[in-house]
Image (cartoon, rainbow, N blue to C red; front, side):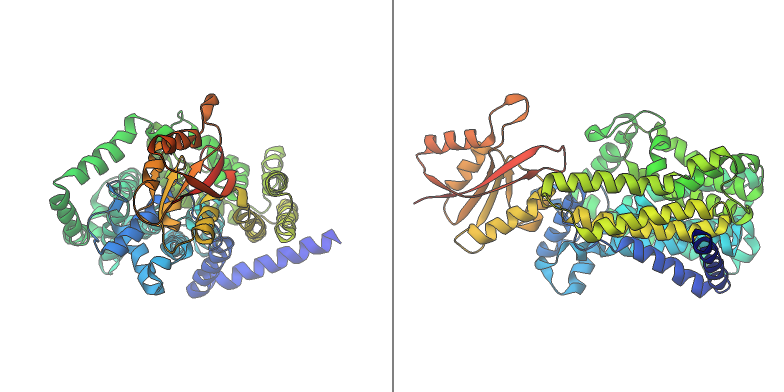
Length: 566
């Protein structure tokens, strides 16, 4: 029975790859469908995450409400970490939805979803002239089911859109490297500089840095820099400046230079020497993490390391390593480390894997390959055990469809290992199918873990218990930005004493106060809240309590909703 399943799987996979790779439109469509299938589970049902997504969406919501599209603010504080590009894209999605302030979190995530799918298709396009049709198709499919990109596609922030702009510029850079004369006669240099201009409006100099490092590294195999002239740098730089310079001038005038002091000084250059907000790690941090964040292609990459080493002098391998190694070393040296920083290097890793599997008849050859390929089903199994156990522990029940989907991912992962003994190329679509099944189980399960999502339940409690329409809101002890995003952008995030002072003011007001003990046995915020009420001579009424675990830090919260009595 298994013999027939494996034979049918290999035959179907090879037919699909051959059919799609013969026509560019079919290849792009297949890669885009694989990516969309991987990114959509849980995309709209996952509540707003903290803290980055909460800050981005809160700033966008304020931008839409105020009509100020120049200065970026998070409540009363300026948010001068990145340019306005991502906020403009999110605001455009909100306006197009027609829902205004009532737009759900899925609307704010539309730019990230489009960026992730577009970047995946551009991965296929970028490597097409270098590694060929079949390998480029497989590289796009592998990138579309990568764990790290799947996370970024579901979060309303910069990195998925940045990924798309970098891949657009990288595709043109490759074509300049491979055939400069042919590129000069096309419009593609304008795409290169346009993508870099958009990138500079999304995350400042980061996209420019990634592409510039790749260009410098490619000068070694090209034995010179003359090929870069095919990119038409002088008119191209003017296009880049035309895209980015007007807003940069406007924000400089508005903030009197404070934006650059924060964005370039503290946020960009400051991260090189110091680990910001505790996000640090030693050199080798990303090398240890890639085996999880690059799953499922990480198992294939590990299995193919001997092939990559053996072919290290081959032109295609050298070019792909130029995109990975220099930028990777820079990220390892920088003091501040977050998993998504290395995302722009993952497409080249996917292309290396795809190039290898199209040339190796059998992937699982030797003890090393057989050992490393076990990750194709071990990670879904770990998610099944850990995720199911955590869900049962916190929620007291298990979602049947998620468990079945995770079991399907384990089964398909095992099948991929078996297929690897017969056909390396056929492994890739089976890997993609296993990832899709895993995502169908994982993300809906995470979205339904109510104990992890305090802000949505707190917002619902206010709507149900406030006794007046649209009350003013404060939160004592819980300062996550998703809370004002889901309630009111002017919600006060403060401590217990200040929450009591807030209730003392005129008008309809409610306040959430944390009744859970503080760290190291410190009294709760509610103790300070009640003491301050007594000082003010006020009486307040407990309306309800929302309990759960704060996703940031994992601390248990007991958020009690209060209103002042006459």
